[in-house]
Length: 267
Image (tube, rainbow, N blue to C red):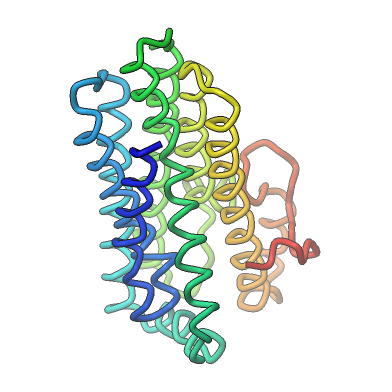
């Protein structure tokens, strides 16, 4: 249990950047928290480290640093992103208890997301029969998800340079409208898969499951916000309507084309 308290303390410390501006709890605070938690796992469990978990830690570190830097650069350079980031609802001062609740909730979520690796290494150090095949499977799925996210962002940036005011429908975007969110779902699915070989007990399964369910909710909530924003921007375009009707929203080949009506996904 002590290692979880260490992870929580690290997550709280890094994500505290959100006290500067509460959106940072979910954005750059999220990215840097995941990166630093990956380093913390590697340091705390260095004597029990295994190749697949080491690979996962590297993946999480790269993912977290890349996300945080990407968001910082976009905030600096993109006027459209600034408009979204600093819209009136976001700039209103939040009561201290709201900020505290968001801070602690985010820190707990980030610990839950990364917990499968900690449980695997902890249980391995205790001599429990962990299964390396599941760890490799999880690391490979996580690597695939990160690669998809990076490729999707590159394709979008390239397309926007050519046609800044047109929606992106090429490359991965021809398979799914939110390939970056799909990539992140794969990343955290890979992390969660490790639990199946980590010899977890009930409370470990609970923590990992809550972390996984939480980030899946966040991804679908983000996809809903993007769907609504794209409808506002491109809703009068017949080309966009045809694209949206034939292209799944967030999971390729799964015929889910809209979540706009699901207000419970409002984040």
